[in-house]
Length: 456
Ligand SMILES: *Cc1c(COP(=O)(O)O)cnc(C)c1O
Image (cartoon, rainbow, N blue to C red; front, side, top):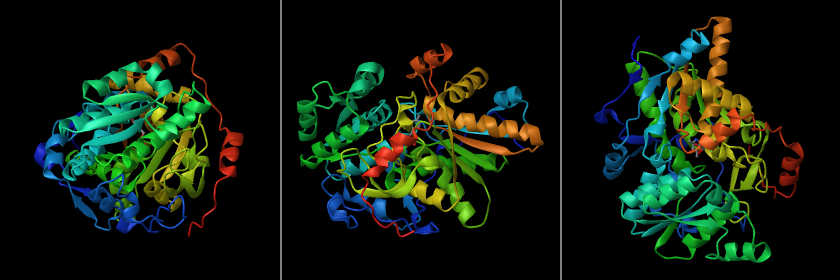
């Protein structure tokens, strides 16, 4: 076994293709449905907001899709990202387990999100698109897309949920540094926004509302497209660079994963890590335990229903077959803003449904307890989202201590928490609230959902 702290690939060892699990899924993925007709969405339906290359990837049955040269060149700014052996954390836990974390926090915006932002900006640029419109909650996705658009000389318009815009000015400034234009949503720039403001001039906004504004902006401007930072198949595809690199790094370390862990908001960082490992399980080559971790306040995979639902609050986007808490569900305002989504990526939901991936949920306080332990042993301050995965890593390592099993635990470290220090302040001051599973709210949100056969 290799005894290094950091397992680093050189640039030549970076994957040359992304891995597409669609052709391999034990149960084929159900098609997205048109919100107006309830019929499967066609490529033509998506053309007003996505370039052809992205639409093709969304539906592709090719197992490997080449990473374009210019995307690889930009990836090299921070990729391949390091895989760390968390030796200090292991010591502190007195565990016989070996813990590894794949550090996606080394990208310029500080998370895994530019892995897809750069690819999406590239395909739009090639299609002659001049501007991308998107939404952002806490600002991670908006900053990743502003960064990516800037590198390709494109404009980026970000609809940022108003409450975050006011409360979290630093991510907004970061977007502006990279050339993005940022508006507090709801705005008076769109019909959706104006309608909301007419009813409630003091609206604080929501992610679903901001999605509706960005989609309308893209659909009504010839030179503008829309970009989504999670959930969709092409986003998970681009993120597989995480899992593919990790597998090579484990080989270098002469080790093999027993457990793979990641946090789940829309499912893109965890999906990107999990898919190459799930593929080995499907082929019968391995039996890796794969665990997605979510907050108890937004327990999509652990408490949601498996059915068709809209991607946004207004019900304007296609319906996706996924575990959902209902598109009208408004999760409590926890600090892991990136994990507050009512649904999850259909690919990930499919894997959970077929038993290839497991899910568990934690409340905020135990999550931050693990985050602090991590920061004080490994040095790096994890994002609140990432800290959910770290909680599960710590629990699995403690289990190994009890049973004496020397398991290899691998975690996707989705991002650093340098813009989330207010959350750490709240935790250390004892101000964080643990939300119970809000059963009535979920029942209420699922009540009016249209029923479509799931075929499964
Ligand atoms: C956005 C974000 C997440 C959640 O999104 P996924 O699509 O589930 O990966 C998790 N961690 C960080 C650091 C993020 O920025």
